[in-house]
Amino acid sequence: MSASSHPFFRWLRRPEQIKLSLWVKLLLLSGFIWVVNDLSGLFPSFSSKVQGFAATMLLFVVMGSLGRTVYRVFSVLFVLLLAVYFFTLKLYGPLSYDLMLSMRFTTTAESYGYLSDVLRWGMVLSLVLGISLSITLLFASRIVIRNKYFLGASVLILIALPVAKAQLTGVVLSNKYRDGSSAFSTIPGKLIFKARYDLGLANELVENMTAYDAGYDWSAYSDFIPKQVNIIVIGESSRADFYDMNGFDLFPLTPNMDSTFNYNFSQCISPASVTISSLTRTLFLTDSNFNSIPQANLVSLFRSKGVKTYWISNQGRVGRSDSPFSALGMTCDSSYFLNQASYHTAQEQDQAMLPYLHDILESSSRTGEQVAIFLHLLGSHPPIDNKYDTLTIAYPKRNIVAHYMQSVHETDAFVGEIVDALQVIPKHNMFYFSDHGITYDEKQEYFYHGAGNWENYHVPLVVWSGGDTAHRNIDQGISLSNLIGLVHCFNKGPELQLDSLLSTIRPPLTVLDADNTPRAILKLGSNPIGL
Image (cartoon, rainbow, N blue to C red):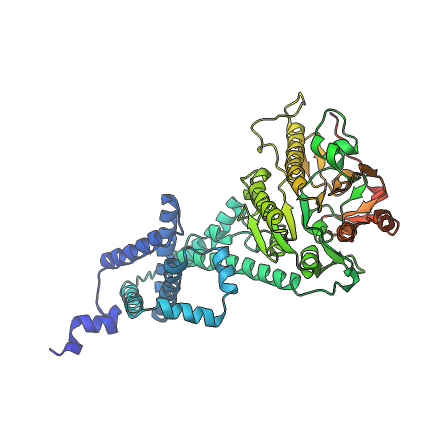
């Protein structure tokens, strides 16, 4: 018998010619899928592994029943997908947003050089052998079901399963900001949708960063002379009427701000009722249509003057409302994100950002380096009733309003610590504001973005300026869209020209709701909270 006619070699060439019993095929196929399932790390719990195993087995049976060519093509593609995934898993770890982001910033030459270092002959041979044996095993394990009713029912199950899981878990597969892979049970479905999700977010971030960092002609700001330290504290969902300096007098809720501010803008209005629409018109200059100019942002202004920029955030790093500002943060010289997912998953209190801030201030104090620090707080973002185990405010009730007050009080304490830390650096400015306010539903007892109420737009805006002894309340109407002009004003030189700036600012007449539809300020409703 020649070597080429040996059954083993005939099996390698045409594995389906070797007649294996159905039970042997089931054993081979199920064993292969279970091992892949277990090693992939895609199924964290035992129940999800069982579900993934069953769904992937059913997928292979359906493909095998559709014909030899369909099955072979599917098997080869499946194995190649696994090869790429496991190779990536070994070198870089699990699929993630950070991995995709790294890949987007890696040049072809860098990738080639890295692969040249890691792809030794032993690894190449192991990879080729693993792919070959996997394809051979799958070819030999083809299972065919002739019953068209069973086949039809199987196809319907494979289609209906992710739809049902999406409904149960609240995943909208068309929403690029939600990981759709959780709705899939088959290994290919999970891998493809996970990679699609992470790559989509990475692409969006890179596109935003490219737009923000494109460069802007700041020649109109030639007299912008930044002080040694500028801190921009971006609050969240904070109503102006819960601040002592704006008339809250039930008890001292914001004593640090009230006793230390230099300038309080008591009639400040946010441009919009939600974060993304507000901050894109606060941290950016706008065009004649009140749309943001991506490259004309506050980070770019500081960097144009050689100031070292920092972004420290307790908000999310990815998400519909998070990604545009994490991208802005990543154009800074250094960025720190306490929360790697969306703001929904935030676990840390805002105080956890302070050690990063203190390190930067200590370095600037020692070296004299000019710095601009952006602090993005989680602040009073709803839901707030599960944030505080202990309420320290002097309010007798222990309801949702008390928790909201506590969040404002915590923000005041946070700002107070920064005010104290800045005393060793005389040449400084700090700006605190909230991206928008919030509305309270007394009947349902919860806070929400209520676009029709004044309190959803009326926000705190407070400025501290080193060496300034003023303690001035300014009741002129002003929009947060004037922030860049305000920062410019406080960084012009020894003589503050605030009144000159205010004389050029017209009080805002309209704001934008969640759909970016203009609303007349005079037609907004009122949302007082009975305390």
